[in-house]
Length: 383
Ligand SMILES: Cc1cc2nc3c(=O)[nH]c(=O)nc-3n(C[C@H](O)[C@H](O)[C@H](O)COP(=O)(O)OP(=O)(O)OC[C@H]3O[C@@H](n4cnc5c(N)ncnc54)[C@H](O)[C@@H]3O)c2cc1C
Image 1 (cartoon, protein in one colour):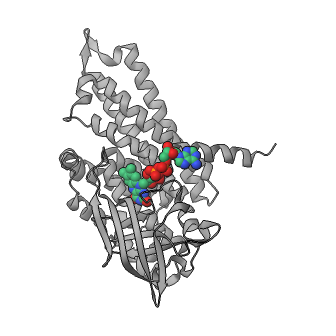
Image 2: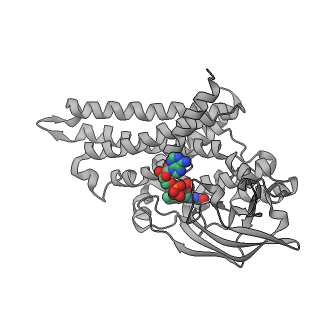
């Protein structure tokens, strides 16, 4: 076994034990109460999960994207919200790792790796999500700092976290607009106001909020890369990783739904036999398995391409699209297999059904993924 495989097995085994003993028994209750899992997060910090793709040089575990995707899929199999606490944090960290100045990397990455500084990405605003060039939050240079004004919404980890990669306009009149967009490492301080925690269909237990920036001052040293006008590109260049991460969440939900359905179909009997012996149920189980496995294989292929340093926007888009649609389809099929019990708040099936649709929307909607796939097909295969 290679060192990499051995390291991956050790980490995945430890994760398995942690999830089975310290997470799964508490998910139902935390989710029902929409309660933040403070104790679990502390344990995740100890395990180094907040630094799993941060390089070892900066105190992280320096894991490959392939291993990271397996970690995300396994955590999501237990509880999708838990993977969100770690993942949008790592998207912030990877933006700094890829585009930060040396001073920014030295200052922030070790604190991101331990989870001392935790957070996510602040992109979406009340009037725009997909069309990020339409953001209105501004940052104006005044002496040694920028003054930020505007609002953001749907920002995950912004209540219990303490830092964001914040996308703003430093030149609202720039043409094209992206040349006036910049990214900041924004630690919570005066003027960085959480106005409301949003009530969500699923993805509960994790904080997703509306934010107001009112004359919030951020040091010029926190401008990612030290240059204005690169913010959109800095964030978009992280989307491949972000999509692999959401794809991995899809793999976790799709597999969780499949596992529940396979188990239940063997114990529930109708007309004198387990329902797994009825052909209509067999067809559902087979389709669920094929969807889950297709999503997993596409996700592993995209992660491997990312690890090789190849361009993989199409591969990540395919993985994200296939595995998140698999999650949504498997969640409803799991409910069908469970009959009325699937509709009960006492079982996990309805949680999967409420969690899965977020994956279709987040990190680039699935409509957008198909557009990216089609454009890449044409670009890579000129007639
Ligand atoms: C639970 C949750 C957590 C979130 N966490 C975060 C976070 O941490 N940070 C953050 O910044 N954001 C976050 N978001 C926001 C998320 O990224 C956006 O919802 C997403 O980008 C879509 O944007 P939108 O909701 O404004 O939809 P819109 O952009 O308004 O899109 C609406 C519809 O139009 C379609 N559409 C839009 N443009 C096109 C086009 N060019 N071609 C074809 N179809 C198009 C979309 O596919 C969609 O069907 C979160 C959202 C949710 C629900």
